[in-house]
Image: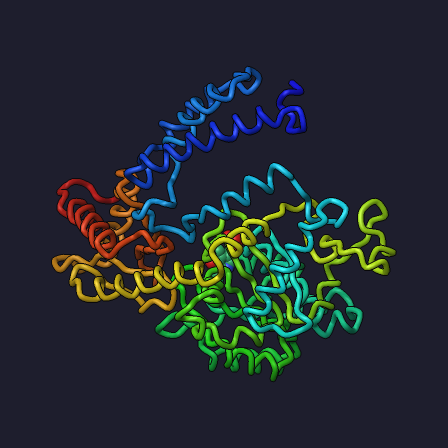
Length: 488
Ligand SMILES: *Cc1c(COP(=O)(O)O)cnc(C)c1O
């Protein structure tokens, strides 16, 4: 069994095993003609249930053959140009190489004595990102597992920087006075974070969006004023730079003004829109982000990085102390005086992957402009898709894209019952998924069911979008044309 440990004596076994795996995946990628096979849970589950984990195969080739059956054959392939569903990107090769290196070396980024150069590389990438944002000389941050964790950490800092915390908490009631403002199109992790942070059930005040799905600043001003008059405390505003559903970008400069006026922490959730930080053409769409107190970025969404790769950035490094705890075994206080950089002092996690290496390899190979150009391409593609949809009487399209998302709905001329149209759209999405020809997402707009393209693949063409729209219309028409019971 020792032959399976990666060490000096097994280097050859390592090389062969990994190469074998890489060969399989490469062959798979080359042969994938659809984003999905359309396999059902009922078909797939028995294959996985049937495997006895207590009876190992002892042979890499056999394990890979089995993996083909239980995973590779029927996986959802984000690199396919007709995968248009969620915020999943095709990944760039330098980052995949980084992934292979980081798991083989297996550094843990919690302390210097488990990572050395890894810590410095992560720090340099944090500095690079903060500079792109324009957060100023005192900025800092840390890599996280994803946007949800970044939002949680940002709101933790905001809570600890709010007045009741600075006053040493006047009692548990103070927690209940804190309010967080976020648009109705903000990510659900904002509410989840508020709950985890012990804020009250009414802590998150939902602000309406305008026609373009951007937070309405007049409504925000009104709510912040109302909150203050009621003796409540505006703890933070979460501005979304790229909403998950629409890619809409909240008016950041106006929100910054209001945060200044009411002494609230400004958090910008740029999990999706962070790709603009590297953009060659559209960086100005997130102007105002430099005024944030904290920013969430998901490199695994718009920097073409494998999951996971994300970070939280802060304007003032000192605020990260709210996540600092010292353990004798790991990061004793004296190490701070010795100026030993222990990233765990800034993180909610302890043992932590060296995800930063993927971004490092990417920037060193392609440069930021290379990444930004890819993201610009998908933004341009979305603009083309919008024109396509706007000109097509079969579809209603919601907002002109600020990033790379299109939300639309099939509207047959002959049908006026909105509930029937809802069902036809739901059916079209399901039928498309089951066919495996394309994968699209769905959401609700004004309580009606819509479909969604999240475009993150520069290989997707206008022709792909047109073809998928035809497939959707076909499935919906077929459904509406069926004389049988449609209650389901
Ligand atoms: C995806 C997303 C998140 C959550 O990020 P994860 O990496 O999935 O945890 C948060 N905010 C926005 C706006 C997002 O699009």
